[in-house]
Amino acid sequence: MSLAKLARLQALPGRPEIMPQSLARVVVHLIFSTKNRAPIIPKQIQPELHAYLGGLLANLGCIVIRVGGVSDHIHALFGLPRTSSLADLVEILKRDSSKWVKEKCPVSPDFYWQKGYGVFSVSQTHTSKVATYIANQEAHHQTISFQDEYRQILRKNDVPFDERYVWE
Image (tube, rainbow, N blue to C red; front, side, top):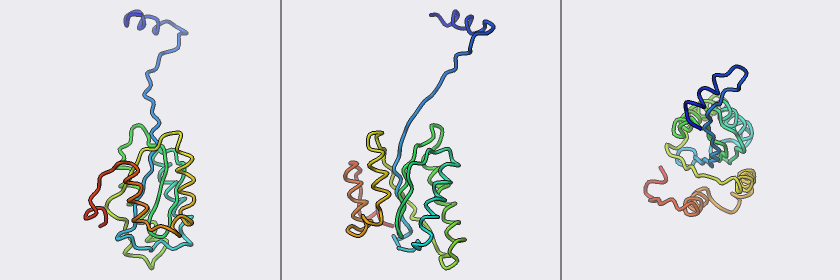
């Protein structure tokens, strides 16, 4: 059908307007650590921090699948909004949650997240497996350090890295 004919059809009374759509489903696994990987997120606020991070993500238009972590790092699994910049989203997430931790735990006035982060695409068929992995972080880290976990994830995703610059 020609564009001219399509335009005439759309203009007819009672005829629904054809709406163009841009659709996307991009699931990402975000990982970031406390500065110098210090284990300073108190266990008692971890569930609340994870919920707060989930709320921030939702407010940024993300479809939150799972947020978790332990005393020195965070994992977040979410659907990235089609119109959002990942870098801007992570900056807001880290900035606002850092302020929240400082308010919640006055004993941590020097709390900061590391400057960098890791982000990895997750296929729809693996989303549930990654969500379970995040849910089991506490048990997982009984046998492996954050550094070894992160190295494994980088290698699994074929991300080249230089040890001198991964850890700040």
